[in-house]
Image (tube, rainbow, N blue to C red):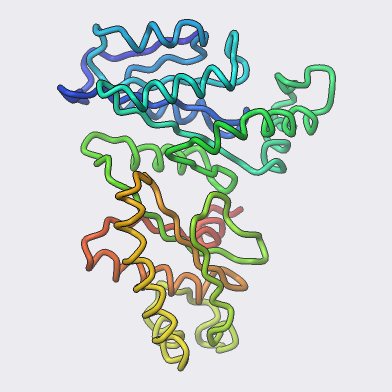
Amino acid sequence: MRVTSSDDSPLSQSKSQRRVVLITGPSGAGRSTAINALEDLGYEVIDNLPMSILPRLLQTHGLTRPLALGLDVRNRDFSVNALIEVIDELTRNPDHDAEVLYLDSSPEVLIRRYSETRRRHPLAPAETVQDGVAREIDLLAPIRARADILIDTSEMTPHQLRDEIERWFAEGHQADMALTVQSFSYKRGMPRGVDMVFDVRFLANPYWEPELRALNGMDAKVQDYVQRDPRFAAFFEKVLELTLLLLPAYREEGKKHLSIAFGCTGGQHRSVTLAEILSKALAEHDWQVSIRHRELERRHSGL
C-alpha cells in the first residue's frame, strides 16, 4: 500500500463535504499516472488500499484535503460487489462528494502496453496477456457502468492524461456537468465512452480541393467551405437545438459528463469543423466546453 500526502498543499477542502475520488480501471490504462497527477494537485492519495479498511478510512475526520483512492484487482481482498456497496454508501452520505474515475483503454492497447513491459498480467500469471486483459475487463464491467468520469486513454500519452486529470480535478473545478466535443476518423474507429455521435460524411469534403487538402477544420477556409454545403445550415441548427435541449436535462438528472463526437472519413476537415463550430455556439450559451481532435492530436504527437 502506498500512502502519500503533502501538508503544504494549496488545495482547500469544502467545509460541508469532503471530495472523494475512487480511481480504478484495467491494469495498464493509466491509473498510476492519474494517481500521481492527483497527488501533485494536492490530494491526499492512498493507493492499493485493502477493501476491508476503506469504510473505516472514509469515517475518519482527521483528513482535511480531498481524498483520492486507487483501487484495482491487485488490491488485497478486492471485490466488485464490495466496491459497489462503498460507492452506494458514499453517494448516500451527505458528508462526501464522491466520484468514480474510471481509466479505460481498448483491449489492443492494453495488450500492447503489457507486452512492452514484459510483465505478467495479475489475473493471468500462468496464461497469456490476452486472457488476463479479457478477464479483467469483464470483471470490472459493473464498475465501469457506475463511473462518473470515464477517460479513455487509448490515444493518450501520459502527459496528455495528466493534462486531462488536471482539467477535471484542479482547484476551482466546478462539480457541474463537464462537456466534451470531439472529432474523429471513422477509419480509426469510434471513440469509446461517447454519448452522442454525428456522422458528417454526407457534407462536401474539402479533401478533394487541392488548396484545402493540407489544412484542417480549425482553418477558416475549410470552415467556410463546409458551411457552404446547402445541407449544413439545417443540419447544424438541428444539432444545436437538440444539444441545448438535452444539456439541462442531463445536468438535472445528475450526469457529470457528456461527450459529443463528430466523425468523418479522415478526422481532419468536416468533423473538426463541426466540433469547432458547435463548441463556439455552446460557449455563447454559457456552457464550458472542452474540445479534442483525436486525429489531429495523433499527427501532432507522431502516432
